[in-house]
Image 1 (tube, helix red, strand yellow):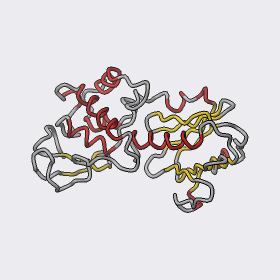
Image 2 (cartoon, one colour):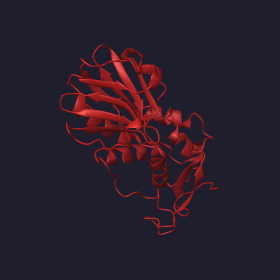
Image 3 (cartoon, helix red, strand yellow):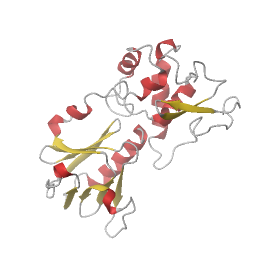
Image 4 (cartoon, helix red, strand yellow):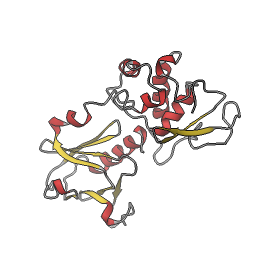
Length: 252
């Protein structure tokens, strides 16, 4: 699943391509909005909120999308071949005279009034890469359920918005805790917030790639800190990686 840094990079590409330009093509390929026509309206901005994308359009409208596991927005120049997937996977097309943005495999796509955005993103915690970032509020939300495993608490977007499965494992490594340690038992729990922020900030300006990961996807390879082979297991149906020597806490 794309994480906060990837979603922000997507928003920046869309904003650069569309913001301030008149839509000359509009095609929303979901039954509810099949007849919606946004042509003739100007795109005002594209804003990320956690893992959500908000494309604001003249006339008080917002196109809300979420990439989830394999959704993607691609931007093409006139005459450029579209390479994001077969045509039947296209869910949205927004075109201007200079660029065309194509949304592939978007599991969430809805057109709403801009004034109603809170209905779809109001439940989110502080955005790690957003202007509303509030580390104290994020920490309060994380500690509201002290018995909850650290890994689960980090993935809950109501606590802090932007952490996905990759940065869950990476954050736990940085704070030397297994993902199954109850968040209330973590010494200096504010380190969770600091580490998550550090990771997303380090990757926010690296389109298409991240720096080398500490533990995620490195099963059986040596820990970069101590050399012990990295272990892997499932947590809530998702793979998780950790160092059995460097990270303290319960394991499966």
